[in-house]
Image (tube, rainbow, N blue to C red):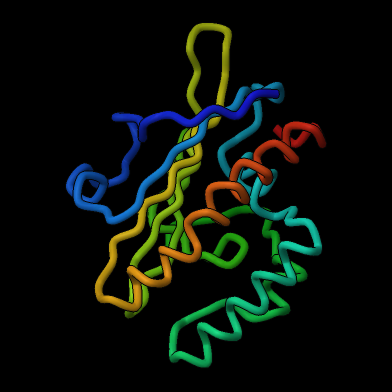
Length: 173
């Protein structure tokens, strides 16, 4: 049930130049007990189950972002994330468009005026051991993006680890 910080894996489809130049990046690895789970199920197992208090914080953040002219998910998208039977590149999974989807990795994110971000959910197998690596990177475009990250990063780091831990505890991973 351990979530450990790690490097963004070299086998990720995330652009190496973006990884190296990103203003912020992090990556967390956790064991998978549901070894046959596909990458979409793993992604949804983590990101489609926010606790209500986290949903409320996201709704408040998104309203502020919308007020500032940024593209942000609606309250309805946060409270009741749409889950489809299948996904393709360009579809939204939860609140984010999918940029890349392979059998082992799903990359979603958003491009905005202040920053672009990507979240990668990568399923890796080492012999008999399967795990998931969740990586995030943000490329900042302006001062607002830097200020935004300054305030968001501590919550992000803690929140992602909580979501992964909650998914493990609930048996979704």
